[in-house]
Length: 86
Image (cartoon, rainbow, N blue to C red; front, side):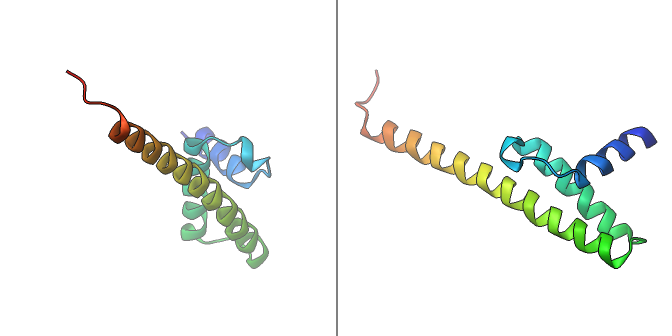
């Protein structure tokens, strides 16, 4: 279990191409950042870096959610315009 926490902590702090992150990965990394910030014990510089990473991850999650909403809206609009089945 400690190994998983260490890996998650490293992943949360590892800079990556955020566009390549899936929603679940970004969400999990964001949760790890929040956990680290809530636990405290980090220097001001580390806390600022974690906060900045959290902001990046939150934007990635929001882009995924916005995309999902657009797909749902498009599917619903297409369904409304389709002739009734049956």
